[in-house]
Length: 438
Image 1 (cartoon, helix red, strand yellow):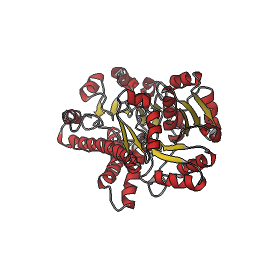
Image 2 (cartoon, one colour):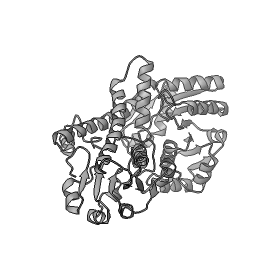
Image 3 (cartoon, helix red, strand yellow):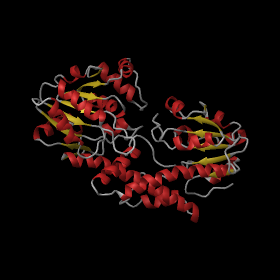
Image 4 (cartoon, helix red, strand yellow):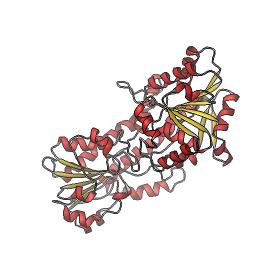
């Protein structure tokens, strides 16, 4: 099949590359000349493990190409995927659909034959019907269907998620569109991965409901962690005991500084807004949003306590600033709340992150970047473990403690424990939901 993918951001590029690896002929379209030039040189503009090699393989096989010309990309295509950004709209928390509707109109004006227009971007319920209206108005003669095909990719594990999904969700309104989508995902169907075919609205809602539920699990365990600190319980043991219940499961029950990234903050806000607009308030989701922000501020208080009440004049090493490991994504990362508070409080902040510097240099002004965690810690008054990169899971804590002016650690991902820290020579240690010392 020939597929056009509109947008070469995270979702569009990963999806386009993986569809080409299924054997489809894929043309990825973007308006950014710089991005297209990079992709044509074989350079990947985002960090995602394994994506560069998979992209090169399919370009070489002649199944994958990149262009600025939307009209040529969709010529002869049986499906056109819209995978453009839907950022949170300023002022009201709703998803901004400007790019989605602009893409729909452009597709309509360029298309000549029957095509399925598939929304891959995360969009509010009812968006696909609006896409249908936009396309019909722009080209009344065009024969087309719309489909909703939300993505469920985890940054850092996106290729595996695409190739071995928990499920594929497809919202359609006609048998013809259903057949096209079935053919696109035929390689997964043949390997018995579940394909859920539903109506447009249900497909749109599944995405928001799933992300809001996962964000709720994270926020719930973070609230439990705060209580654990008050009563003397260990949140890691609590999480383990909870997760053994098959009705709950152990995933997304790891206490930390709060969720971030491209999906959870944006999608929870959008779901809350959808509820408000339909007079069906999402009270739990609204609470999740509020508590998550409180958790980031609570982390700042922890760090302040470890600095004897003031950041002024202190040297602080921060290990990890991306919202999670194995990505360069800084969107809504806890570091964007925590690090500015350190700098604003008068601290000299050193930052070490395997992939975060490119975005972080713009988003975190006033910090010093280090390539090596041991260099970052030398002479520091506090070391903060903020993102659980593998590089930070087996540090020589004795070496770090010896190099610091005052060996104190804020382990905000619960990688180590108080006993290990004390034995390594630290004079103060705190984590999330567990007993520390100072």
